[in-house]
Length: 159
Image 1 (cartoon, rainbow, N blue to C red):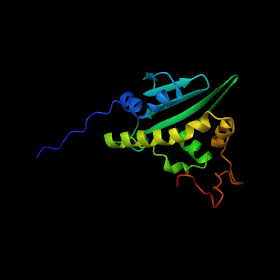
Image 2: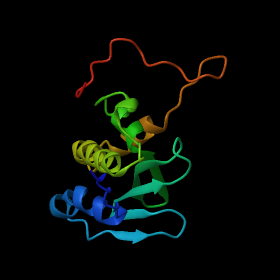
Image 3: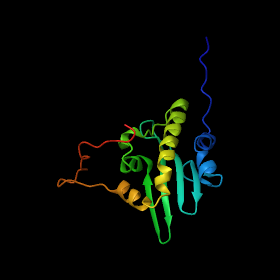
Image 4: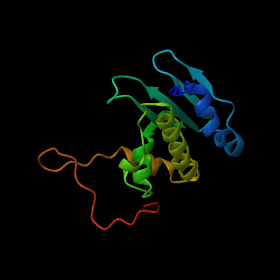
C-alpha cells in the first residue's frame, strides 16, 4: 500500500481562504502578498493593517505570526495576535497556535488564528483599540527582571 503524499501548502491561498472575512465583513481590499524576506499576506484599510506571515526555520522555530498595526497619524502601534487575545481577556496567549510543521498543522493554525482575529476585529476597530494594543504590548517585570505572572482568578471569555 502506497503512502499518500501530502499536497503542498500554498501559503497565500491558505491565508486568503481563512481570512476572507476581512474582505467580506470589514471592506478590506484583496490582500497583498510578498516573499521579500518571508512569505507575508497583508490586509489593509486606512486605520488597520493585518499581516499573516510564515516564519520558516528549523522545525522547532518555524511558525505562523499574525499581527495587527493600528494606523494612526504620527503613530504606529503593533501587537501580535496571542498578546491581543490575552489583553482582551479572551484566553491566555498560549491558546493561540503558531505551529507550522506539516500541511494539516499549517491549515489548522491558520484556521484557529482566523477565528481569534474574527473575535478581535470589533475591538481593533472600536474606540478603545489603542488601549487594547497598549495592554497587549505591556510586559510587566518583577524586581528580578522576570515577566510577572498573571493575576489569579482571571475569567477568560473563551477558556
